[in-house]
Image (tube, rainbow, N blue to C red):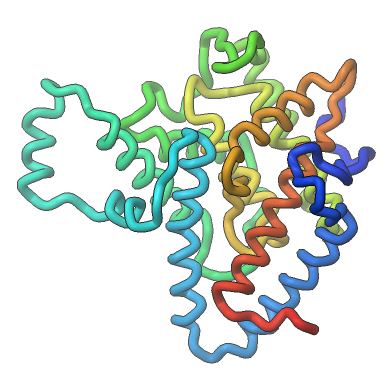
Length: 304
């Protein structure tokens, strides 16, 4: 059964947009291509590599802010993220080692660990360049387990291992895929992704549709006991890296989590078929906003 396909339309008039926003799918795709061409030209013409590397470092911090905010429905700031990324001093580390087994970590320390783990993963899998094109052969279930092991370090029991029990969606009366099916379904999902995303003539619109299929089906499988959302975002960024300039956080601002979850519901429960049209529209909007923000922040000329 093919779960990665493109024979559907991206939702042209998303229900979450304001009534006066007339930008449709064609406009967004055309704009993304224009922005990315402008960014590519600016990077090629800029002799100061540190200038662009500085932005990539800044975006990594922004990715953390947006990713954690969208997943946890909390409001972070860049300053707070930067504070969380600072390494603790010797006395604080000594204190943690001595009392780690006696004290239950508070919410702020868990959040700091979550941010630090996620940052380490980004550094590991995303090079400090625009438009990275990582090898698709690396995209395997083992790679997903590696990412989960890294983001779950010190936070999630049995990080890097598939779950062995049934789990339900937190906000819906829905049971994810049975544990005994996970291994085979993950193998097939990643095999299809390597086949589809490995095409040399892959275009933006088709890649977004494939990405929406992957995201919805991966989260339907829900292979891990916890941390599936973070792993899914990282894997989607990996798949779309040649089209998204930098890692994609799936964040559009206020109410992002509500929109994202509703798009997933529509993708997974679309009558009798699997059709992630709204989710594809949401991903496209995120790519558009990410590309546009790069142009604005880095003063890239997009007039022509």
